Length: 619
Image 1 (cartoon, helix red, strand yellow):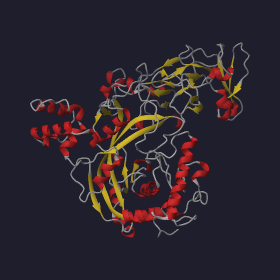
Image 2 (image 1 turned 180 degrees about the vertical axis):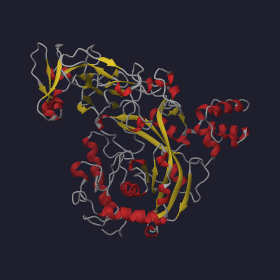
Image 3 (image 1 turned 180 degrees about the horizontal axis):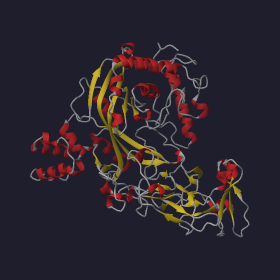
Image 4 (image 1 turned 90 degrees about the horizontal axis):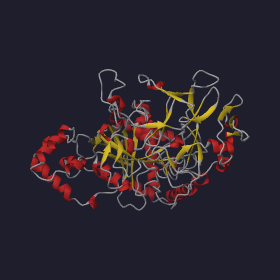
Protein backbone atom coordinates (compact mmCIF):
# COMPACT_ATOMS: atom_id res chain seq x y z
CA UNK A 1 0.00 0.00 0.00
CA UNK A 2 1.19 3.52 -0.79
CA UNK A 3 -0.29 6.83 0.26
CA UNK A 4 -0.88 9.89 -1.87
CA UNK A 5 2.79 10.88 -1.49
CA UNK A 6 4.02 7.51 -2.87
CA UNK A 7 5.27 6.42 0.55
CA UNK A 8 4.81 2.77 1.40
CA UNK A 9 2.81 2.47 4.60
CA UNK A 10 2.13 -1.27 4.98
CA UNK A 11 1.40 -4.61 3.36
CA UNK A 12 -1.71 -6.71 2.75
CA UNK A 13 -2.24 -10.12 1.19
CA UNK A 14 -3.87 -9.90 -2.27
CA UNK A 15 -6.94 -11.83 -1.10
CA UNK A 16 -7.50 -9.31 1.70
CA UNK A 17 -8.12 -6.62 -0.93
CA UNK A 18 -11.22 -8.56 -1.96
CA UNK A 19 -12.65 -9.79 1.32
CA UNK A 20 -11.55 -7.26 3.96
CA UNK A 21 -9.73 -4.20 2.61
CA UNK A 22 -11.05 -3.36 -0.85
CA UNK A 23 -11.70 0.11 -2.30
CA UNK A 24 -13.49 2.26 0.25
CA UNK A 25 -12.35 0.25 3.27
CA UNK A 26 -10.30 1.54 6.18
CA UNK A 27 -6.99 -0.07 7.12
CA UNK A 28 -5.95 0.52 10.72
CA UNK A 29 -2.13 0.39 10.63
CA UNK A 30 0.12 0.51 13.73
CA UNK A 31 0.36 4.30 13.74
CA UNK A 32 -1.79 5.40 10.80
CA UNK A 33 -5.29 4.86 9.52
CA UNK A 34 -5.86 5.00 5.76
CA UNK A 35 -8.68 4.55 3.25
CA UNK A 36 -8.12 2.43 0.13
CA UNK A 37 -8.80 4.65 -2.88
CA UNK A 38 -11.15 3.87 -5.75
CA UNK A 39 -10.20 1.93 -8.86
CA UNK A 40 -9.71 5.13 -10.86
CA UNK A 41 -6.56 5.75 -8.75
CA UNK A 42 -5.08 2.27 -9.26
CA UNK A 43 -2.41 1.55 -11.87
CA UNK A 44 -3.76 -1.14 -14.15
CA UNK A 45 -0.35 -1.96 -15.60
CA UNK A 46 0.78 -3.35 -12.23
CA UNK A 47 -2.00 -5.94 -12.19
CA UNK A 48 -2.25 -9.35 -13.83
CA UNK A 49 -5.35 -10.27 -15.80
CA UNK A 50 -7.43 -13.20 -14.53
CA UNK A 51 -9.38 -15.08 -17.18
CA UNK A 52 -12.81 -16.51 -16.39
CA UNK A 53 -15.39 -15.76 -19.05
CA UNK A 54 -18.46 -16.91 -17.09
CA UNK A 55 -17.69 -14.63 -14.16
CA UNK A 56 -16.85 -11.69 -16.41
CA UNK A 57 -20.22 -12.06 -18.16
CA UNK A 58 -21.99 -12.11 -14.78
CA UNK A 59 -20.13 -8.98 -13.63
CA UNK A 60 -21.12 -7.21 -16.84
CA UNK A 61 -24.78 -7.98 -16.24
CA UNK A 62 -24.51 -6.09 -12.93
CA UNK A 63 -21.99 -3.30 -13.62
CA UNK A 64 -22.47 -2.80 -17.35
CA UNK A 65 -20.93 -3.96 -20.65
CA UNK A 66 -17.98 -1.56 -20.29
CA UNK A 67 -16.28 -3.98 -17.84
CA UNK A 68 -13.65 -5.68 -19.97
CA UNK A 69 -11.29 -7.38 -17.52
CA UNK A 70 -10.83 -9.03 -14.17
CA UNK A 71 -7.51 -7.93 -12.63
CA UNK A 72 -5.60 -9.32 -9.68
CA UNK A 73 -4.42 -6.79 -7.07
CA UNK A 74 -0.99 -5.31 -7.86
CA UNK A 75 1.91 -7.31 -6.45
CA UNK A 76 5.59 -6.43 -6.42
CA UNK A 77 7.74 -8.79 -8.50
CA UNK A 78 9.76 -11.36 -6.60
CA UNK A 79 13.27 -10.27 -5.70
CA UNK A 80 16.27 -12.21 -4.38
CA UNK A 81 16.88 -9.67 -1.62
CA UNK A 82 15.38 -6.56 -0.05
CA UNK A 83 13.69 -4.16 -2.46
CA UNK A 84 15.25 -0.73 -2.75
CA UNK A 85 12.62 1.59 -1.19
CA UNK A 86 13.48 4.26 -3.76
CA UNK A 87 13.10 2.00 -6.81
CA UNK A 88 10.03 1.94 -9.08
CA UNK A 89 9.21 -1.57 -7.84
CA UNK A 90 8.81 -0.22 -4.29
CA UNK A 91 6.08 2.10 -5.51
CA UNK A 92 3.90 -0.78 -6.77
CA UNK A 93 0.87 -1.13 -4.57
CA UNK A 94 -2.64 0.01 -3.81
CA UNK A 95 -3.07 3.78 -3.35
CA UNK A 96 -4.36 5.00 0.01
CA UNK A 97 -4.84 8.31 1.82
CA UNK A 98 -4.95 9.15 5.54
CA UNK A 99 -8.45 8.75 6.94
CA UNK A 100 -9.96 9.85 9.22
CA UNK A 101 -8.47 13.30 8.68
CA UNK A 102 -8.72 14.18 12.37
CA UNK A 103 -5.83 13.29 14.67
CA UNK A 104 -5.37 13.53 18.41
CA UNK A 105 -2.22 14.28 20.39
CA UNK A 106 -2.16 11.86 23.35
CA UNK A 107 -0.04 14.29 25.43
CA UNK A 108 -1.90 17.62 25.15
CA UNK A 109 -5.24 16.17 23.88
CA UNK A 110 -5.25 18.45 20.82
CA UNK A 111 -7.83 17.37 18.23
CA UNK A 112 -7.25 18.71 14.71
CA UNK A 113 -7.06 17.70 11.05
CA UNK A 114 -3.84 16.18 9.75
CA UNK A 115 -3.60 18.94 7.10
CA UNK A 116 -4.13 21.81 9.58
CA UNK A 117 -0.39 22.50 9.78
CA UNK A 118 -0.24 21.32 13.40
CA UNK A 119 1.04 17.83 12.57
CA UNK A 120 4.08 16.70 10.59
CA UNK A 121 4.45 13.45 8.66
CA UNK A 122 7.54 11.44 9.62
CA UNK A 123 8.47 8.66 7.22
CA UNK A 124 10.97 5.82 7.30
CA UNK A 125 11.40 4.28 3.82
CA UNK A 126 13.09 1.21 5.31
CA UNK A 127 10.46 0.64 8.01
CA UNK A 128 6.95 1.50 6.71
CA UNK A 129 5.45 0.52 10.06
CA UNK A 130 7.17 3.54 11.60
CA UNK A 131 5.51 6.10 9.33
CA UNK A 132 3.42 8.41 11.47
CA UNK A 133 2.19 11.94 12.18
CA UNK A 134 3.74 13.81 15.09
CA UNK A 135 2.67 16.91 17.02
CA UNK A 136 5.96 18.83 16.70
CA UNK A 137 4.96 21.84 18.83
CA UNK A 138 3.31 19.94 21.66
CA UNK A 139 3.73 21.78 24.98
CA UNK A 140 3.68 18.56 27.03
CA UNK A 141 5.97 16.25 25.08
CA UNK A 142 8.73 16.09 22.51
CA UNK A 143 6.98 15.48 19.17
CA UNK A 144 4.57 12.76 20.38
CA UNK A 145 2.99 10.49 17.79
CA UNK A 146 -0.52 11.63 16.92
CA UNK A 147 -3.18 8.93 16.75
CA UNK A 148 -6.25 8.82 14.48
CA UNK A 149 -9.54 9.95 15.98
CA UNK A 150 -11.48 6.80 16.76
CA UNK A 151 -14.92 7.97 15.66
CA UNK A 152 -16.41 8.25 12.17
CA UNK A 153 -19.89 8.63 10.73
CA UNK A 154 -21.40 6.47 7.99
CA UNK A 155 -24.76 5.74 6.43
CA UNK A 156 -26.36 2.71 4.83
CA UNK A 157 -25.99 4.29 1.36
CA UNK A 158 -22.25 3.62 1.50
CA UNK A 159 -21.07 7.10 2.53
CA UNK A 160 -18.43 7.65 5.21
CA UNK A 161 -17.12 10.88 6.67
CA UNK A 162 -15.08 12.31 9.50
CA UNK A 163 -16.96 12.67 12.74
CA UNK A 164 -18.33 16.26 12.81
CA UNK A 165 -16.32 17.33 15.85
CA UNK A 166 -17.00 21.06 15.59
CA UNK A 167 -20.69 20.59 14.91
CA UNK A 168 -20.96 18.12 17.76
CA UNK A 169 -19.26 20.19 20.47
CA UNK A 170 -21.01 23.41 19.39
CA UNK A 171 -24.37 21.63 18.97
CA UNK A 172 -24.78 22.89 15.42
CA UNK A 173 -23.15 25.11 12.78
CA UNK A 174 -20.60 27.56 14.18
CA UNK A 175 -18.09 30.18 13.09
CA UNK A 176 -15.86 29.42 16.07
CA UNK A 177 -12.31 28.43 15.09
CA UNK A 178 -11.06 27.61 18.58
CA UNK A 179 -8.87 24.56 19.10
CA UNK A 180 -10.62 21.34 20.10
CA UNK A 181 -9.50 18.94 22.78
CA UNK A 182 -10.44 15.31 23.30
CA UNK A 183 -9.97 14.08 26.86
CA UNK A 184 -10.86 11.24 29.19
CA UNK A 185 -12.09 11.17 32.77
CA UNK A 186 -11.99 8.20 35.10
CA UNK A 187 -10.02 5.00 34.80
CA UNK A 188 -12.31 3.31 32.29
CA UNK A 189 -12.59 4.11 28.60
CA UNK A 190 -16.36 3.73 28.53
CA UNK A 191 -18.15 6.18 26.25
CA UNK A 192 -19.51 8.29 29.11
CA UNK A 193 -15.94 8.99 30.19
CA UNK A 194 -14.88 10.41 26.78
CA UNK A 195 -15.38 14.14 26.26
CA UNK A 196 -14.61 16.82 23.68
CA UNK A 197 -14.35 20.55 24.33
CA UNK A 198 -13.66 23.80 22.48
CA UNK A 199 -10.94 26.09 23.91
CA UNK A 200 -12.15 29.16 21.98
CA UNK A 201 -14.17 32.13 23.19
CA UNK A 202 -17.53 30.59 22.27
CA UNK A 203 -18.06 29.30 25.84
CA UNK A 204 -19.63 26.14 24.45
CA UNK A 205 -19.90 23.55 27.25
CA UNK A 206 -17.98 20.29 27.00
CA UNK A 207 -19.89 17.38 25.50
CA UNK A 208 -19.77 13.68 26.31
CA UNK A 209 -19.45 11.24 23.41
CA UNK A 210 -22.24 9.16 24.90
CA UNK A 211 -24.50 11.61 23.06
CA UNK A 212 -23.04 10.53 19.71
CA UNK A 213 -24.68 7.10 19.79
CA UNK A 214 -28.21 5.72 19.72
CA UNK A 215 -31.26 7.97 19.74
CA UNK A 216 -29.22 10.88 21.11
CA UNK A 217 -26.76 10.50 18.24
CA UNK A 218 -29.53 10.71 15.66
CA UNK A 219 -30.41 14.17 17.03
CA UNK A 220 -26.83 15.32 17.62
CA UNK A 221 -25.44 14.59 14.14
CA UNK A 222 -25.95 16.69 10.98
CA UNK A 223 -27.34 15.43 7.68
CA UNK A 224 -25.16 13.10 5.61
CA UNK A 225 -22.90 14.99 3.20
CA UNK A 226 -22.86 12.04 0.76
CA UNK A 227 -19.10 11.72 1.07
CA UNK A 228 -17.28 8.90 -0.69
CA UNK A 229 -13.86 9.19 0.97
CA UNK A 230 -12.28 6.66 -1.40
CA UNK A 231 -13.34 8.71 -4.43
CA UNK A 232 -12.53 12.13 -2.97
CA UNK A 233 -15.92 13.53 -3.86
CA UNK A 234 -19.23 14.51 -2.30
CA UNK A 235 -22.59 13.63 -3.77
CA UNK A 236 -25.65 15.82 -4.23
CA UNK A 237 -27.10 14.92 -0.86
CA UNK A 238 -28.26 11.87 1.02
CA UNK A 239 -31.43 11.28 3.02
CA UNK A 240 -30.05 8.34 5.02
CA UNK A 241 -29.47 8.73 8.74
CA UNK A 242 -25.86 9.08 9.86
CA UNK A 243 -24.60 6.61 12.42
CA UNK A 244 -21.47 6.89 14.54
CA UNK A 245 -19.06 4.01 13.92
CA UNK A 246 -15.78 3.17 15.56
CA UNK A 247 -12.56 3.11 13.58
CA UNK A 248 -11.83 -0.54 12.87
CA UNK A 249 -15.44 -1.68 13.34
CA UNK A 250 -16.51 -4.47 11.02
CA UNK A 251 -19.68 -2.64 9.94
CA UNK A 252 -17.72 0.12 8.20
CA UNK A 253 -17.21 -2.05 5.07
CA UNK A 254 -18.92 -5.17 3.76
CA UNK A 255 -17.78 -6.57 0.39
CA UNK A 256 -20.26 -7.48 -2.35
CA UNK A 257 -18.67 -10.24 -4.41
CA UNK A 258 -19.44 -12.73 -7.16
CA UNK A 259 -17.62 -16.01 -7.68
CA UNK A 260 -17.52 -18.86 -10.17
CA UNK A 261 -15.74 -22.16 -10.55
CA UNK A 262 -13.64 -22.81 -13.64
CA UNK A 263 -15.50 -25.70 -15.21
CA UNK A 264 -15.28 -27.57 -18.51
CA UNK A 265 -17.62 -26.36 -21.24
CA UNK A 266 -19.66 -28.59 -23.49
CA UNK A 267 -17.97 -26.96 -26.48
CA UNK A 268 -14.59 -28.20 -25.34
CA UNK A 269 -11.21 -26.93 -24.19
CA UNK A 270 -10.47 -24.73 -27.17
CA UNK A 271 -13.64 -22.66 -26.89
CA UNK A 272 -12.98 -22.28 -23.17
CA UNK A 273 -9.53 -20.83 -23.94
CA UNK A 274 -11.06 -18.46 -26.51
CA UNK A 275 -13.81 -17.32 -24.11
CA UNK A 276 -11.40 -16.64 -21.25
CA UNK A 277 -9.16 -14.54 -23.54
CA UNK A 278 -11.91 -13.03 -25.67
CA UNK A 279 -11.07 -9.35 -25.03
CA UNK A 280 -7.77 -9.90 -26.84
CA UNK A 281 -8.83 -12.54 -29.35
CA UNK A 282 -11.87 -10.63 -30.61
CA UNK A 283 -9.41 -8.13 -32.12
CA UNK A 284 -8.07 -10.77 -34.51
CA UNK A 285 -9.70 -9.71 -37.75
CA UNK A 286 -8.49 -12.37 -40.18
CA UNK A 287 -7.09 -15.89 -40.41
CA UNK A 288 -3.79 -14.45 -41.72
CA UNK A 289 -3.17 -12.30 -38.62
CA UNK A 290 -3.89 -15.17 -36.23
CA UNK A 291 -0.33 -16.60 -35.79
CA UNK A 292 1.18 -13.22 -34.91
CA UNK A 293 -1.46 -12.40 -32.31
CA UNK A 294 -1.23 -15.89 -30.82
CA UNK A 295 2.54 -15.46 -30.43
CA UNK A 296 2.07 -12.09 -28.69
CA UNK A 297 -0.52 -13.44 -26.25
CA UNK A 298 1.54 -16.55 -25.53
CA UNK A 299 4.56 -14.38 -24.73
CA UNK A 300 2.38 -12.42 -22.29
CA UNK A 301 1.64 -15.61 -20.36
CA UNK A 302 -1.88 -16.13 -21.75
CA UNK A 303 -3.49 -18.89 -23.81
CA UNK A 304 -2.27 -21.78 -21.67
CA UNK A 305 -2.97 -25.00 -23.58
CA UNK A 306 -3.42 -23.34 -27.00
CA UNK A 307 -0.45 -25.26 -28.45
CA UNK A 308 -2.56 -28.41 -28.64
CA UNK A 309 -4.69 -26.92 -31.46
CA UNK A 310 -3.85 -25.91 -35.02
CA UNK A 311 -4.54 -22.47 -36.48
CA UNK A 312 -7.63 -23.57 -38.44
CA UNK A 313 -9.32 -24.95 -35.32
CA UNK A 314 -8.47 -21.80 -33.37
CA UNK A 315 -9.91 -19.53 -36.08
CA UNK A 316 -13.09 -21.65 -36.24
CA UNK A 317 -13.51 -21.30 -32.46
CA UNK A 318 -13.05 -17.52 -32.72
CA UNK A 319 -15.74 -17.32 -35.40
CA UNK A 320 -18.13 -19.47 -33.33
CA UNK A 321 -17.61 -17.20 -30.33
CA UNK A 322 -18.08 -14.08 -32.45
CA UNK A 323 -21.38 -15.37 -33.85
CA UNK A 324 -22.73 -16.66 -30.54
CA UNK A 325 -25.86 -14.88 -29.32
CA UNK A 326 -25.63 -13.07 -25.99
CA UNK A 327 -28.99 -14.43 -24.83
CA UNK A 328 -27.64 -17.97 -24.83
CA UNK A 329 -25.57 -17.31 -21.72
CA UNK A 330 -27.21 -18.56 -18.49
CA UNK A 331 -27.82 -15.86 -15.87
CA UNK A 332 -27.29 -18.29 -13.00
CA UNK A 333 -23.59 -18.86 -12.31
CA UNK A 334 -24.25 -22.11 -10.47
CA UNK A 335 -26.44 -23.85 -13.03
CA UNK A 336 -23.57 -24.71 -15.45
CA UNK A 337 -21.53 -25.95 -12.51
CA UNK A 338 -24.40 -28.17 -11.37
CA UNK A 339 -24.72 -29.62 -14.86
CA UNK A 340 -21.02 -30.51 -14.94
CA UNK A 341 -21.03 -32.01 -11.43
CA UNK A 342 -24.06 -34.18 -12.18
CA UNK A 343 -22.92 -35.57 -15.55
CA UNK A 344 -22.87 -39.34 -15.71
CA UNK A 345 -19.17 -39.23 -16.59
CA UNK A 346 -17.65 -35.86 -15.49
CA UNK A 347 -14.51 -34.80 -17.42
CA UNK A 348 -11.27 -35.70 -15.68
CA UNK A 349 -8.49 -34.22 -17.79
CA UNK A 350 -8.99 -30.45 -17.52
CA UNK A 351 -6.13 -28.41 -16.00
CA UNK A 352 -8.37 -26.72 -13.40
CA UNK A 353 -11.05 -29.36 -12.97
CA UNK A 354 -10.48 -32.99 -11.99
CA UNK A 355 -13.21 -34.96 -10.22
CA UNK A 356 -13.87 -38.64 -9.52
CA UNK A 357 -17.22 -40.14 -8.60
CA UNK A 358 -17.48 -42.41 -5.57
CA UNK A 359 -20.23 -44.19 -3.66
CA UNK A 360 -22.16 -42.40 -0.91
CA UNK A 361 -21.67 -43.50 2.71
CA UNK A 362 -23.66 -46.71 3.32
CA UNK A 363 -25.47 -45.28 6.32
CA UNK A 364 -26.77 -42.39 4.21
CA UNK A 365 -27.33 -44.18 0.89
CA UNK A 366 -31.06 -43.43 1.08
CA UNK A 367 -30.39 -39.66 1.21
CA UNK A 368 -27.16 -39.09 -0.76
CA UNK A 369 -27.18 -39.96 -4.47
CA UNK A 370 -23.41 -39.88 -5.00
CA UNK A 371 -20.22 -38.11 -3.92
CA UNK A 372 -17.63 -36.45 -6.16
CA UNK A 373 -14.05 -36.11 -4.98
CA UNK A 374 -12.58 -33.01 -6.61
CA UNK A 375 -8.81 -33.31 -6.66
CA UNK A 376 -8.43 -30.07 -8.60
CA UNK A 377 -10.64 -26.97 -8.54
CA UNK A 378 -10.18 -23.30 -9.38
CA UNK A 379 -12.41 -20.53 -8.06
CA UNK A 380 -12.38 -16.93 -9.30
CA UNK A 381 -14.03 -14.19 -7.22
CA UNK A 382 -14.66 -10.57 -8.20
CA UNK A 383 -15.49 -7.51 -6.09
CA UNK A 384 -18.42 -5.55 -7.55
CA UNK A 385 -19.08 -3.08 -4.72
CA UNK A 386 -19.51 -2.73 -0.97
CA UNK A 387 -21.97 -1.61 1.70
CA UNK A 388 -21.63 0.15 5.04
CA UNK A 389 -23.50 -0.03 8.36
CA UNK A 390 -25.65 -2.98 7.22
CA UNK A 391 -24.34 -6.06 5.39
CA UNK A 392 -25.66 -6.70 1.87
CA UNK A 393 -29.39 -7.36 2.04
CA UNK A 394 -28.83 -10.69 0.36
CA UNK A 395 -25.85 -12.98 0.78
CA UNK A 396 -26.36 -15.00 -2.38
CA UNK A 397 -25.98 -14.48 -6.10
CA UNK A 398 -29.49 -13.77 -7.34
CA UNK A 399 -31.10 -11.80 -10.13
CA UNK A 400 -31.64 -8.93 -7.65
CA UNK A 401 -28.11 -7.84 -6.62
CA UNK A 402 -27.82 -5.94 -3.33
CA UNK A 403 -27.53 -2.17 -3.24
CA UNK A 404 -23.88 -1.24 -3.16
CA UNK A 405 -21.48 1.72 -3.14
CA UNK A 406 -19.37 2.38 -6.28
CA UNK A 407 -15.79 1.22 -6.70
CA UNK A 408 -14.73 4.17 -8.88
CA UNK A 409 -15.86 7.64 -9.94
CA UNK A 410 -16.99 6.50 -13.39
CA UNK A 411 -18.38 3.16 -14.44
CA UNK A 412 -15.51 0.71 -13.89
CA UNK A 413 -13.81 -0.80 -16.92
CA UNK A 414 -12.33 -3.55 -14.74
CA UNK A 415 -12.84 -4.97 -11.26
CA UNK A 416 -10.47 -6.58 -8.72
CA UNK A 417 -10.47 -10.35 -8.66
CA UNK A 418 -8.62 -13.25 -7.08
CA UNK A 419 -8.24 -16.89 -8.00
CA UNK A 420 -7.62 -19.84 -5.71
CA UNK A 421 -6.91 -23.47 -6.44
CA UNK A 422 -7.63 -26.41 -4.21
CA UNK A 423 -9.71 -29.54 -3.69
CA UNK A 424 -13.20 -30.35 -2.52
CA UNK A 425 -16.09 -32.73 -1.87
CA UNK A 426 -19.40 -32.56 -3.74
CA UNK A 427 -22.49 -34.35 -2.40
CA UNK A 428 -25.65 -34.72 -4.45
CA UNK A 429 -28.84 -35.44 -2.49
CA UNK A 430 -31.48 -37.82 -3.83
CA UNK A 431 -34.21 -35.78 -5.46
CA UNK A 432 -37.05 -38.18 -4.58
CA UNK A 433 -36.11 -37.97 -0.91
CA UNK A 434 -35.93 -34.16 -1.20
CA UNK A 435 -39.37 -33.99 -2.84
CA UNK A 436 -40.93 -36.22 -0.18
CA UNK A 437 -39.42 -34.09 2.58
CA UNK A 438 -40.60 -30.83 0.94
CA UNK A 439 -44.12 -32.27 0.77
CA UNK A 440 -44.45 -32.64 4.54
CA UNK A 441 -47.00 -30.36 6.16
CA UNK A 442 -44.62 -29.50 9.02
CA UNK A 443 -41.89 -28.47 6.55
CA UNK A 444 -44.28 -26.22 4.64
CA UNK A 445 -45.39 -24.57 7.89
CA UNK A 446 -41.75 -24.06 8.89
CA UNK A 447 -40.99 -22.49 5.52
CA UNK A 448 -43.81 -20.01 6.08
CA UNK A 449 -42.37 -19.03 9.48
CA UNK A 450 -38.92 -18.58 7.95
CA UNK A 451 -40.46 -16.44 5.20
CA UNK A 452 -42.13 -14.28 7.86
CA UNK A 453 -38.77 -13.75 9.53
CA UNK A 454 -37.24 -12.87 6.15
CA UNK A 455 -40.00 -10.33 5.49
CA UNK A 456 -39.64 -8.77 8.95
CA UNK A 457 -35.85 -8.52 8.52
CA UNK A 458 -36.21 -6.65 5.23
CA UNK A 459 -39.03 -4.42 6.47
CA UNK A 460 -36.93 -3.42 9.48
CA UNK A 461 -34.21 -2.28 7.05
CA UNK A 462 -36.68 -0.59 4.68
CA UNK A 463 -35.89 -3.00 1.85
CA UNK A 464 -38.63 -3.50 -0.69
CA UNK A 465 -40.28 -5.66 -1.73
CA UNK A 466 -39.97 -7.70 1.49
CA UNK A 467 -40.41 -11.13 -0.13
CA UNK A 468 -37.59 -10.80 -2.66
CA UNK A 469 -34.52 -13.07 -2.46
CA UNK A 470 -36.09 -15.56 -0.05
CA UNK A 471 -34.04 -18.71 -0.80
CA UNK A 472 -36.63 -21.29 0.26
CA UNK A 473 -36.61 -24.03 2.87
CA UNK A 474 -34.46 -26.36 0.74
CA UNK A 475 -31.62 -23.81 0.81
CA UNK A 476 -31.96 -23.56 4.59
CA UNK A 477 -31.60 -27.33 4.96
CA UNK A 478 -28.67 -27.76 2.56
CA UNK A 479 -26.93 -24.66 3.90
CA UNK A 480 -27.15 -25.91 7.48
CA UNK A 481 -25.87 -29.33 6.43
CA UNK A 482 -22.88 -27.68 4.75
CA UNK A 483 -22.05 -25.75 7.92
CA UNK A 484 -22.30 -28.80 10.16
CA UNK A 485 -20.09 -30.90 7.89
CA UNK A 486 -17.63 -28.04 7.36
CA UNK A 487 -17.17 -27.67 11.13
CA UNK A 488 -16.57 -31.41 11.44
CA UNK A 489 -14.13 -31.54 8.53
CA UNK A 490 -12.05 -28.70 9.93
CA UNK A 491 -11.46 -30.71 13.12
CA UNK A 492 -9.87 -33.63 11.26
CA UNK A 493 -8.54 -32.63 7.84
CA UNK A 494 -5.75 -30.34 9.06
CA UNK A 495 -7.10 -27.24 7.32
CA UNK A 496 -7.74 -23.97 9.01
CA UNK A 497 -11.53 -23.70 9.38
CA UNK A 498 -11.52 -20.43 7.43
CA UNK A 499 -9.69 -22.20 4.56
CA UNK A 500 -12.79 -24.25 3.70
CA UNK A 501 -15.69 -22.68 1.81
CA UNK A 502 -19.14 -23.82 0.78
CA UNK A 503 -21.16 -23.62 -2.41
CA UNK A 504 -24.85 -24.50 -2.18
CA UNK A 505 -26.81 -25.79 -5.17
CA UNK A 506 -30.50 -25.53 -4.30
CA UNK A 507 -33.65 -24.93 -6.31
CA UNK A 508 -35.08 -21.58 -5.25
CA UNK A 509 -38.73 -20.50 -5.34
CA UNK A 510 -39.78 -19.90 -8.94
CA UNK A 511 -36.95 -21.97 -10.49
CA UNK A 512 -37.66 -25.09 -12.54
CA UNK A 513 -34.28 -26.88 -12.56
CA UNK A 514 -34.07 -29.36 -9.71
CA UNK A 515 -30.85 -28.87 -7.76
CA UNK A 516 -29.93 -30.28 -4.35
CA UNK A 517 -26.24 -30.49 -3.62
CA UNK A 518 -23.37 -29.12 -1.57
CA UNK A 519 -19.74 -28.44 -2.46
CA UNK A 520 -17.18 -27.98 0.31
CA UNK A 521 -13.79 -26.93 -1.00
CA UNK A 522 -10.57 -25.28 0.06
CA UNK A 523 -10.32 -21.58 -0.68
CA UNK A 524 -6.83 -20.62 0.40
CA UNK A 525 -4.51 -18.94 -2.14
CA UNK A 526 -1.46 -20.76 -0.81
CA UNK A 527 -0.39 -24.37 -0.20
CA UNK A 528 -3.06 -24.72 2.51
CA UNK A 529 -5.52 -25.51 -0.27
CA UNK A 530 -3.65 -28.40 -1.86
CA UNK A 531 -2.84 -30.79 0.96
CA UNK A 532 -5.23 -33.55 -0.09
CA UNK A 533 -7.00 -33.70 3.25
CA UNK A 534 -10.54 -33.10 1.99
CA UNK A 535 -10.39 -35.70 -0.76
CA UNK A 536 -9.19 -38.32 1.71
CA UNK A 537 -12.02 -37.55 4.13
CA UNK A 538 -14.54 -37.66 1.29
CA UNK A 539 -14.06 -41.41 0.83
CA UNK A 540 -17.14 -43.40 1.93
CA UNK A 541 -15.65 -44.93 5.07
CA UNK A 542 -14.44 -41.56 6.36
CA UNK A 543 -17.38 -39.46 5.21
CA UNK A 544 -19.91 -41.73 6.92
CA UNK A 545 -18.21 -41.26 10.28
CA UNK A 546 -17.91 -37.50 9.86
CA UNK A 547 -21.52 -37.02 8.74
CA UNK A 548 -22.75 -39.09 11.68
CA UNK A 549 -20.68 -37.07 14.13
CA UNK A 550 -21.77 -33.76 12.61
CA UNK A 551 -25.48 -34.62 12.69
CA UNK A 552 -25.37 -36.08 16.20
CA UNK A 553 -23.65 -32.96 17.51
CA UNK A 554 -26.39 -30.84 15.96
CA UNK A 555 -29.17 -32.56 17.88
CA UNK A 556 -28.18 -30.79 21.09
CA UNK A 557 -26.77 -27.26 21.29
CA UNK A 558 -25.21 -25.75 24.39
CA UNK A 559 -27.58 -22.83 23.91
CA UNK A 560 -30.70 -25.02 24.03
CA UNK A 561 -33.58 -24.58 24.64
CA UNK A 562 -33.17 -20.97 23.39
CA UNK A 563 -31.51 -22.06 20.15
CA UNK A 564 -33.90 -24.91 19.29
CA UNK A 565 -37.01 -22.85 20.07
CA UNK A 566 -35.89 -19.70 18.29
CA UNK A 567 -38.66 -18.03 16.27
CA UNK A 568 -37.33 -15.83 13.41
CA UNK A 569 -40.30 -13.44 13.45
CA UNK A 570 -39.87 -12.42 17.08
CA UNK A 571 -36.45 -10.83 16.67
CA UNK A 572 -36.62 -10.30 12.88
CA UNK A 573 -33.75 -12.61 12.00
CA UNK A 574 -32.90 -14.76 9.00
CA UNK A 575 -32.22 -18.02 10.82
CA UNK A 576 -34.17 -20.55 12.80
CA UNK A 577 -32.54 -23.00 15.20
CA UNK A 578 -28.93 -21.90 14.69
CA UNK A 579 -26.29 -20.01 16.65
CA UNK A 580 -22.52 -19.67 17.13
CA UNK A 581 -22.44 -22.72 19.38
CA UNK A 582 -23.87 -25.15 16.83
CA UNK A 583 -24.01 -23.87 13.26
CA UNK A 584 -22.16 -20.63 12.48
CA UNK A 585 -18.79 -20.65 10.71
CA UNK A 586 -16.28 -18.00 9.67
CA UNK A 587 -18.05 -15.48 7.44
CA UNK A 588 -15.38 -15.87 4.76
CA UNK A 589 -16.39 -19.55 4.55
CA UNK A 590 -20.12 -18.88 4.22
CA UNK A 591 -21.69 -17.67 0.98
CA UNK A 592 -24.70 -16.21 2.84
CA UNK A 593 -23.09 -14.42 5.78
CA UNK A 594 -24.21 -16.99 8.42
CA UNK A 595 -27.85 -16.43 7.50
CA UNK A 596 -30.57 -18.84 6.33
CA UNK A 597 -29.68 -21.64 8.77
CA UNK A 598 -31.95 -23.99 10.72
CA UNK A 599 -30.69 -27.28 12.17
CA UNK A 600 -34.24 -28.40 13.06
CA UNK A 601 -34.69 -29.09 9.33
CA UNK A 602 -31.88 -31.65 9.46
CA UNK A 603 -32.04 -33.52 12.76
CA UNK A 604 -34.38 -34.00 15.71
CA UNK A 605 -33.99 -31.33 18.38
CA UNK A 606 -35.51 -30.89 21.83
CA UNK A 607 -38.26 -28.92 20.09
CA UNK A 608 -39.34 -31.92 17.99
CA UNK A 609 -38.44 -34.29 15.15
CA UNK A 610 -41.18 -33.79 12.56
CA UNK A 611 -38.99 -31.47 10.46
CA UNK A 612 -35.82 -33.59 10.36
CA UNK A 613 -34.55 -34.67 6.93
CA UNK A 614 -32.25 -37.21 8.63
CA UNK A 615 -34.85 -38.86 10.86
CA UNK A 616 -32.72 -41.73 12.13
CA UNK A 617 -30.12 -39.62 13.94
CA UNK A 618 -30.06 -40.23 17.69
CA UNK A 619 -29.76 -37.42 20.19
